Image (cartoon, rainbow over all chains, first blue to last red; front, side, top):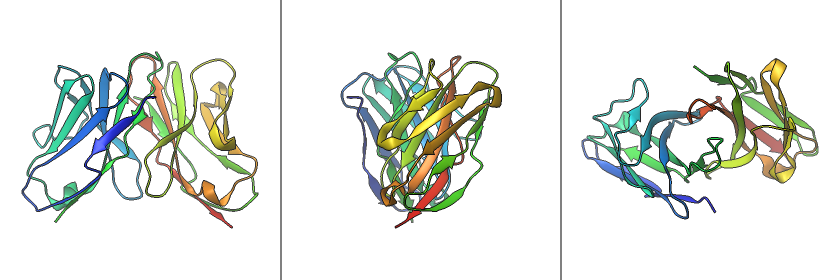
Length: 117
Length: 113
């Protein structure tokens, strides 16, 4: 149980285009989903927290207009990188909290590697 | 704000050696503690977690960790590592006041066959 998927797993795009990444909880309802970014050889940095049906909460320094997050249902959250540039190239990871453990345990997706040319 | 530090950035061991990876956190309240592993090219996997109770926690693949509240530490241990343990290990913490998971910088472990 508690499986989280991401699609696509790998994407290459031209500078200036927008890229949408999907995060799905496959066998549970995710009350909260999280988006992280991981640069090579670095740790995960939380970008934003999203709750179903409400606006995402962004961490300091993360541009909300550039990284659009939509949490339309209890099983799907999307991250859209708008007008992507080479510096946005990174590994984007989502996680989900089913809200049942009471201990804030998150289940992670496999990540999406974005390369912007 | 909570923070997590992992003192060892890179560790190289021979097979059968014992492993201990340090993790210290900074948070004033009750914490939930996690160790995650990321094998090369794969996603994060939970190794073990501590919420309450016995401070010595057993995880998968022979790993264990000990929560020492007085030292704000949650070190990861394994008595005998294998080549397949080569991976990056992340310590993480959440506080009960919220569900934000804060990660340490990670420790890259290489086990030589």
